[in-house]
Image 1 (cartoon, rainbow, N blue to C red):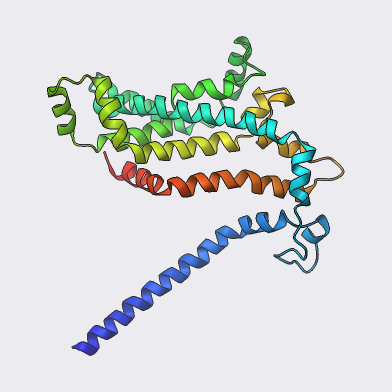
Image 2: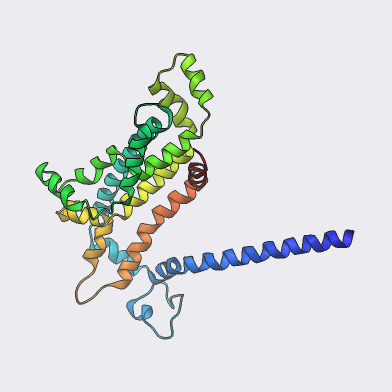
Length: 283
């Protein structure tokens, strides 16, 4: 009996170890581009294209980072990017949580049909609506400002609304009813009851909104116009030239841009995983 138990435990340990090994191998495959980005940012151009290829630079140098900070107005672009990112995060948290609460907790005629229409808009590619949106912003005289990249966020995002609605729909209705009995109105229930409970999904929306605004290239390229308002995503085009792509500088800029995303994810990863999981199974 004891021998069978030991064999069973050994089999379980072997299968678990095999699963961990496979997960590690797949993780390394996905990490290879990031490792190339990080190590390549410390190499010279000749080392990047040397044969045979070496993952680690022969001589670690920070010259590429110094060149990035000196060849472009890095801090001006960083300020412009942060302005857009901060407003997008605020807009995403406020608008999508309100709309998601309305779809999840309030009963009104045609609610489910309107929600389906909102979900259907997710299949529309950004490029399809780009021309009419550009014409509309032109008539509003917003081209060349940050407004086209910040104001639309206050009108909600279909995917973020879906996440908020799914999360809030899973909260027991008894909590809402008891709050109403105590005399709370809908706005008080939303602000004092549901927002504190919704930290996981709010963190998920914040991370996704940050990544979307931080990495956006097409929007700033179309709507900003002046290089005085350029973002970091557009800085790559200024580092390149027809004669010299400056690959080592692009890798350094990419490493700088990826660091804030990693920091934000590791700080909020617990809430992010909870938000994705609970939004997917609730409702």
